[in-house]
Image 1 (cartoon, rainbow, N blue to C red):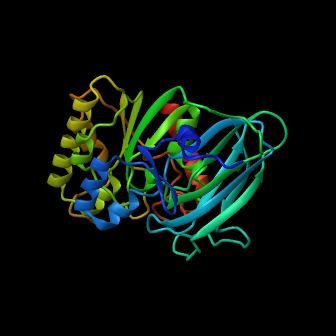
Image 2 (spheres, helix red, strand yellow):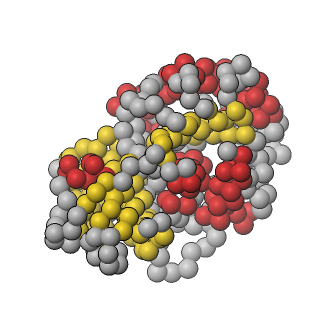
Image 3 (cartoon, rainbow, N blue to C red):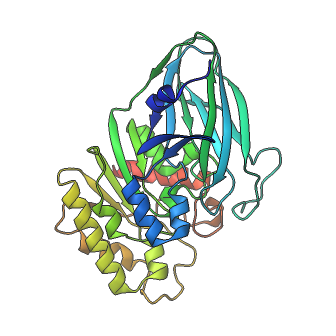
Length: 332
């Protein structure tokens, strides 16, 4: 039984919209207004808006199998991807392009094949809840989603909605499995729908915060700062940071907002025009002091050890993301 567009749309979580195209169903995590902002800002950032970070398919069924078929297209500077399939909260299998051989510690610059994909998953007998986490790294054109003939399908909706802003680390770099991203693990912990607005390489972008979603989030997280330190002057950072949070608070006056300051990075002692890396924390606190924003110091969430970073200095691997999640959830 092949699911139709309306059925797939009904079980999709974390998408601003779902669209039917000639090559398959596309899942868009940014609104058209937000995509236009990034189109004008940076072609590289614009391409990244179409990766499916934070988007998942969640439903109950009694089907024994799940068939998945489509195509993956570039969605960021990384080409590895995984569709993670969970049954009743446990991962049972994945469809990815990186298994079959031992990966080096730094797999981030390796070439991986993208294009057409397909796999049939054994879900087991009986009624169960299924969750398919879409890749954070690529754009997805879904051609077919199939269940057993006669199987029932019931969408499962989370109890909360979580709006998440950030740079590459919130986007997902460099988790092998999308279900292991820190922000996805946090959404699962709170049974929240993850609306992921993170872009790899991004800094505080006030115009993005000035746009408004068509829903009221129960929780907002913001995690910028590491690229700002690397690329901006101190004045640029202060202006962008303050304007971002003011715009965000104006749009969502009653929603709890959590500002997560940057995690450790190996090159933090190098000189930058901005100044000291640890000053980012203090400047964020100063910028939000009168906006009822809770600041969380993220510096020690991931151990200061290259083994927790896929690229050995900045982006956590799956083990690093687990540490990030554990540190963050204690604060929340």
